[in-house]
Image (cartoon, rainbow, N blue to C red; front, side):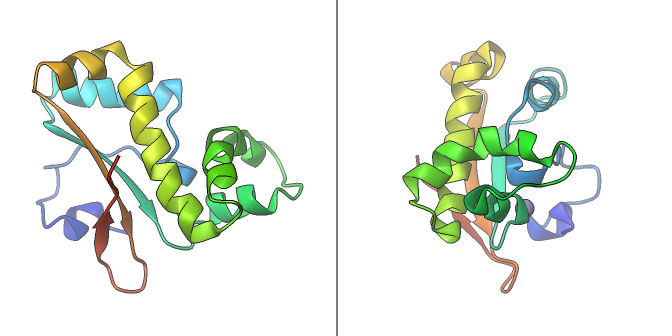
Length: 136
Ligand SMILES: [Zn+2]
């Protein structure tokens, strides 16, 4: 999905990192810290989406090829909280990753405390193109 169009922004106006399952890893954290601290992003938005393949795979917990299963570790807490419901797990995963960002990154935590950065999240509906906010 073209993120600039979803949020009605011009190309280059958003600093975007993409990762299957919208999980936070050290590399993603580092990129987001760069976007916020160096480039001055004011909002850090975790965007999940309906029918997410990564979340669905984590719910099924079947064997998957290569390193795809490395994503499951990050998604599993949401799967447990949602008791295996994919739609609920997508939403819960957005909430969890928002929490992880606030807690795992001292840079992001400080910017939030200083009122310079807002961490928010939502779920993009592939069918309607609408983003539903996820509250923490
Ligand atoms: Zn997905």
